[in-house]
Length: 243
Image (cartoon, rainbow, N blue to C red; front, top):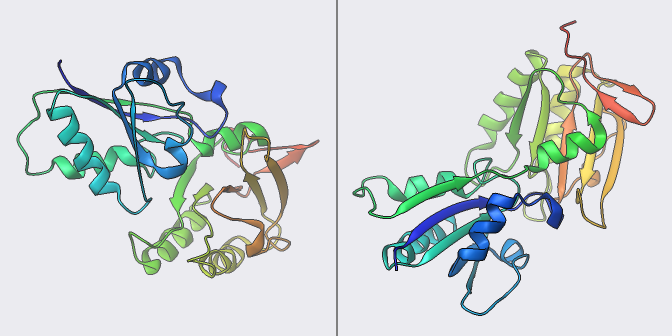
């Protein structure tokens, strides 16, 4: 049996947002590896081994996947959303650094990331220039996050925030809101999109002055508008034309 390794995005939550290309890879796989709740989304079947690991074990997971593929297994590493957006694709290539090129095929299959799924449900808040920032300081210092927040705000980007607030990092998002109010003013629109495409989905748009840290958790995608972002009915959008 010839092995291969695929890193696949399984979308933001709903089964119908998993691409046909990713479904085909999962149907052929002998092994699926990933963070515990992501692997829980993969239906068990005969001939498929599911390998669950903690969210801070990305390099361990990547090396395990490479070893399995080298043994001739058909391996899929799953990430939520898209595997190249704050996810497992970069961890895989980090694990490959300094190693000879593998004899098996490696593929990265895109998925619908939470940022785009949330933006679509809200309307079009990312309709003009935007950036994405991971607010977790597990893998980078808070000083770097703060610098990027300030510079992105000064450049008038709309911003999509991943991993805004967790039990282990309860204070960071509050500080992020303070920085954004300093740079953008109190009237800038900010949207909270929680558990997008699942039965628990919740959407909320308000101003920075009204936003509180408790409105976000690890299931939330937070989108801050630019100076041109506005509401139309229940939707939020950023015009494509520059101000």
